Length: 481
Ligand code: NDP
Image (tube, rainbow, N blue to C red; front, side, top):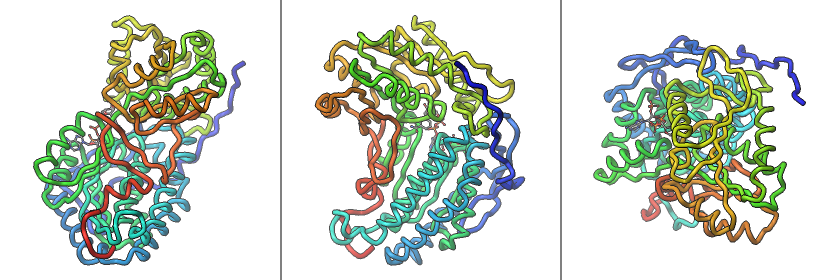
């Protein structure tokens, strides 16, 4: 039975959009070399004009960060830095509805997800790292770990505010200052975050935000005044950054793509597994680096599970991301939609069977229906390449050993899921899966205290938890933090 829902739109009036936004450098919004427009992917309407930072603007931002590092932030006792982080966390909570609406407008993700996942987790990251700021000497990195200096951070468009929090909170807690470049298609919550830094009286220059495109990111990464680079995004750009940093001696952490296996055994609780598969691949339109984009299902239950999955997919509601009942929002950009369409066409050409949930796509904006491919072979592009959209590729296996072999048959290694009632099988699988995170009987669960990161082409370094602090500390140095 299909339920009809009355519209339940969240109010756009919670957000006051400016016509244009400057760069956030030295605690102020300043003009830059040129401007570009950011649009709503759900309607293609222009939301605001944003400044494009050229190399000279990046230079100013790095200089402001250096000054703040040397004069204020690195010398400030950890307990004082912690107070600023607590303040930012509280303001994020106070302004959470505004942030959620703005994120949904700029990114296209359902308001239910920005409200219930992105914004609360972003605040949680600041609370968590605020708690660490005065305890770094007890974190197991020696008695007096030192900050690294000025950190250049480049983030993607899939979780704009949350990725900012993953990057900025640990950097600041450890005594570094930052120059952050948000993605070209989703700059608005980072610019609202800049206002929040002002509201929290954060000393000028501790956080600098330079909006722009890939060239701006390149300028941040290559700047000689940057001591450490932290990047989340595609593996291709990650490799480019690794090459640039290798010759400069900068510290580097990379969080890149994934092609995670979600492995379902025949004794798994079926309804729960179906919800986990749906959450694993259709959460955030599949724009998730750790998405469970390959379903590995034990052959004996494959038909039954796929029927249940298709029934569930048919009940997903696609449409206006601002509607509180929406499950599947808009694809973030025309370029990403083109990529998804190209890869899914290759799936059909290579011989896999495509099934899409029956749902009407809105006339304007960028949309793709939840889609599942069966009859997939491990050599198909849809089984190997990151699609980064609401597309699931299904493979089968007979034994646990075959499941492990197929799950690990990928250049990536970010995450995996295991569904079974047997605790011993979960542990057996977890110790063999080459993935930074292995979820058992759940998927896409995040917590600031739990380190996240990859193996192989999914990158290196960890974000979150005690392990994540190490990326922002000179653990061999002396002195007080
Ligand atoms: P990119 O890796 O190009 O973008 C990530 C960030 O890096 C953005 O801020 C981008 O700027 C910036 N950037 C781009 N080129 C450079 C460069 N040479 N030096 C420094 N910074 C740079 O990802 P895309 O947005 O192009 O997405 C392409 C594919 O990457 C997706 O289809 C998906 O498969 C994967 N991806 C994976 C993510 C993950 O979390 N693992 C996140 C995003 C994408 P700008 O936005 O202005 O181009």
